[in-house]
Length: 272
Image (cartoon, rainbow, N blue to C red; front, side, top):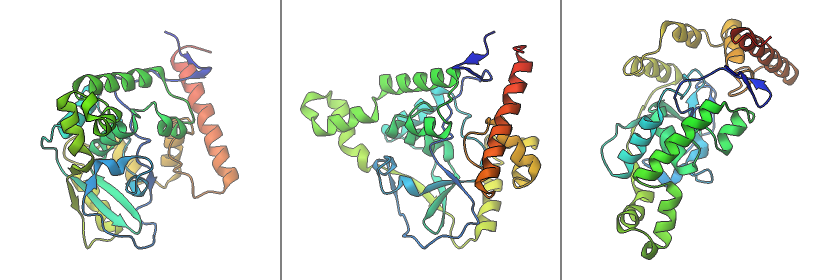
């Protein structure tokens, strides 16, 4: 089995869509300036240049948003576009940041649609330093094609809103309302970051549960072992969990993480 992709050794992944880059991470405990409450989440606010999207954050201990198949991603997007019921996203505000306590996959799927980034777009490539596995590219394209065939891309809807006379009636009708169709939201109120963190773990023990190993890493996320595990797992790319160190130390962590990752993959696939 070949293990060299674009000059780098990468592991073979499963058929999942990696949306981890689409909502940035931040420390729940980091203080911030006061911000205005957001009473609803219109999907048009998820555009990169929108007023809402830059404020969205995941807790820095949140698991990777990479557990859904292309079919699951497409189903969520199509369900929303057809105005069918999807569970509310649970949010908590800390200064100007809006943390996604529950619903990161749902919200990331909608962001993927709006920004045409299913793990292979501009935001994802920047996040992973332009190192995207072939399997991730295949899963991304599969999700994109499913959405396109079932309800159309977000860009299709924007074009239909501008030129309804040139679009199929169903698409034109949907395009007229989708930009303002709100994503259902629930807020955690009157809670500090400790209560918000406890709410995250309590909520996320339902559905796709956090396994024992992941639970240990999350609970000890600032320990050397947890930081090392994350640096190696993503070959020094992705979210910089080690950003509290000085720049030189961060560079060393990323370089060593990449070296260990590459050595492991070479051994795993007998590429030495």
